[in-house]
Image 1 (cartoon, rainbow, N blue to C red):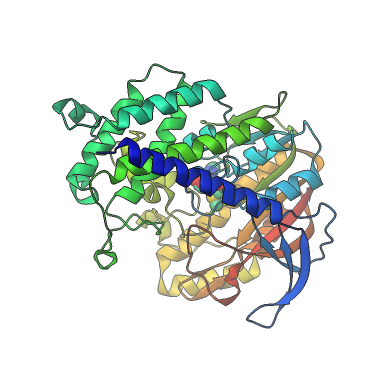
Image 2: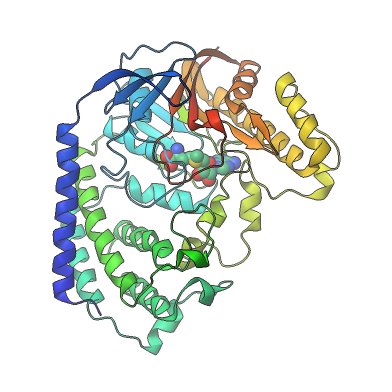
Length: 459
Ligand SMILES: C[S@@+](CC[C@H](N)C(=O)[O-])C[C@H]1O[C@@H](n2cnc3c(N)ncnc32)[C@H](O)[C@@H]1O
């Protein structure tokens, strides 16, 4: 049970959380300083908003400190390898004008589109994954404040009346190992929340917001590790799950997200559009030539995050899928789901350094060599598509890190620059950005703490 006293305590906690964020934002100063990292390298540290005229030279390295990862709707739902908002904001302002159309071909949870809206730009966010599309849609949709307030309170009231009845059974999805992933009482609590949302008579937009809030607590109340991109149970974590956890977490996130949506609503532009596509793949954009004014993205990593597996419990509870996730995995660039007949032979991409590495990997692991090859050929297709749909002389900013495959360090950004150069782009600039506070910890070696920002210009 969740009592009204507990609800009051949660309300107070959220007010405190919001006031802490406001204080943090008020106290932030744009501060630029030179620092030396643990490898003796010099970096420029930038706290807060990135100045639009910040001077960048090739090979410069920056450490950006973000203050806004949870501001507006950015903080709604976890998503692996999200942009920190100050980066796309800076590049959007630098390389586009108000009312321009911006593309993110690997849009994920929609950070680029949120920042486009906040800066009065139109945007298109493409992502192959229906779960990402759903999150991005909710995070970029304006809701009616009054309706939001009324139904949030109604929903909270319902939550306080939780009871296990046979009526809940039809809201419990059937999926592999469900009863290992969740304790019995939690399953009923989740079903009760889902039933309560489903039965409300309200706009689809608001219902979707409640469903994403519901989704946001699923990992935390499951028996799986909260902080791993793979959904796995780790016995040694001794995770504490107790009755009413799902109900209280839901109320907490609901109140928190409601306040973030309201802040976002205040800045929502009147005349700009946002499209979260449901039929596009980065390798096949459903847009005509020369449509976009600027593109920005952070593509997936090779073999690093298995997005469908990360969100499998959420996908099942939201009933986005109910069977095997393998067909969805196969559509993902960087996927590990490849078939034997494809990787028997060695394939190369025509870039010396990368080909040398692929040959070495092939000697010890044919499958992984093929995964690397597939990644770069898929990325080449997507770069060609961005080139086709971008206006002449417009920029494409790609943010990508390196990774290690079978002991070999792949400098992805360098190979992508070569690929871009042979597909109608001029490399204008490249500089490093240290990663801070990502949801995931990708296995990386020494230099891999750095993402690289590549600025391309269409010829
Ligand atoms: C690093 S994430 C992007 C995160 C995003 N910048 C954000 O802030 O949320 C990469 C995204 O690429 C998507 N993706 C993988 N293959 C794709 C494809 N073929 N077409 C479009 N998106 C794809 C994944 O679903 C994932 O959401």
